[in-house]
Length: 116
Image (cartoon, rainbow, N blue to C red):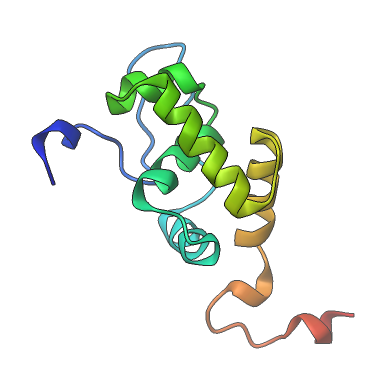
């Protein structure tokens, strides 16, 4: 890993650099790993998706990751395309719903069909 990215937050890490930045974590690292595989997200897309879902705006994400806001916007568009959503809130809702499915949890003894 290059030194340029050393200070980046890891997925699911709760970090605050100021009173105005959100510190919210809805998904844990296991759920993010599942979502990365499910939607074929790159490591950078996953990192940006995590920050978006924690409430960060594109400009804050760009500052935090030391990239241009246009680059964040391009990554967000790619995430939308892969996840088949059109907004940040829909992405968040899709991720929470997908990561929370009982059938996705390991060692689940019940299938989704037996819950009907």
